[in-house]
Image (cartoon, rainbow, N blue to C red; front, side, top):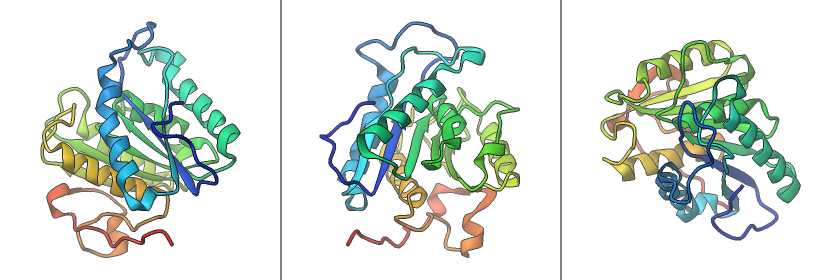
Length: 235
């Protein structure tokens, strides 16, 4: 687990950030790890938001670059990070933010009792991924339907199955960004921060101005239609 700023205690909650990787690779991530670098602006956006002033923000370290079939190596790494977090800060409500393979790992590890939910960015959600363990969790996914690396259709189908398993779900259809989330990066950062605040109970869900019930739906909403949520600042 990597902390971008010195840890402070007590904290009201925590966010763990998980970067992407490869389907198969038993080599460790390189020192210049581009998937990890891409997630640093997301962590920085959280760090700069007043809602997260007393929230511990950390990144998960992977031992290997790949998912590696039934080994599911990044899931093991995420569970180790959650255990390390418990040792450092005690039991805290946790939001997991993951991109691509990291989102798949976050969703798998969401059965941890501290995890309140997951913000999944262009997630890798192949058919048949387990969802029963997501009951009572908040699952929010952002995906550009032009993504050619991971499938937005698979993401929306995953959310439908998660909702049937009693998870609260929200899909956000991003207008641009493809898989790397470079175009409209600020929008990706802003909405991810808003979703993480929702997972931790710091703000209501970003929605399209309809009822609260409509905010939790398997029907994805266009990012352009989202109205800024009312914000409850700390203190």
